[in-house]
Length: 341
Image (tube, rainbow, N blue to C red; front, side, top):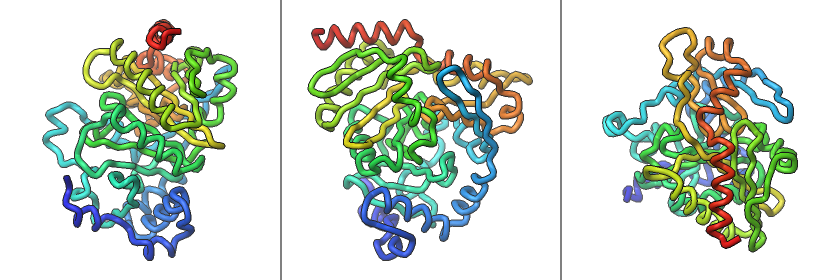
């Protein structure tokens, strides 16, 4: 356990925060925190200023769109070495004692920080790390993801990158959050589920769907009760764990809470990085898909990749890293079998 004085030293006081905006809810406190950090932390100020000038292009498919963002500031994350040796040889940048001197945050749930992400993708981008240095583990922390989503109440979407699915700090449990509506999936979801969704299970007012025609296949869970959402996720996890190899099954998760309902999108993965990432010629594309990319915003930190990437590249990259249709349908049958349907 980190010493309490270290944690306290990284918490922003109410007095400091009140001068930068409203503080009557988690969402408003979080927005005010961003303003405070931009005003007092040079690196943060520069990177959010630079974000206003990033280039974006959009590819329109039949029923949805994919955006590509040229964001040089994300090169460290996109190219992060996440093998065991590299992880052991560097200091964890999410541990309280290793945070930059200027970085301050909010306390949440008695065991998490809300921190401004100084290398943003979203206009407002936050990292939500646990105090303790424990590895990414969604099954033990899913309820906290729901709590974060509820606290942000539709202002921000919460997302999780599995330890082998884009997390640049797989050794330290954390979520991230950013403006709701920034990722295309936030606004496309209802239409996509209506057109391509297949009910997999519905019980105790929780609804589970499978979607297999969205280029990156996913499973969604909707519900109004956090306890029942937890039970539904545990059922999903139990089945997925049996079908997978290794420790935590590969997945990215996007969660939001709006109008009294939680919505959790789970993207099962079959691969961490596509073959384009490892090429050593002009065909290389340094794109390491994580939750934001699966949500419809592909991040390219190198300009040459941004210029040359096309619709066929995007289709191929998603195909490589996402679970295929047959797997999702097989999963659906196994889930129904587990539930006795």
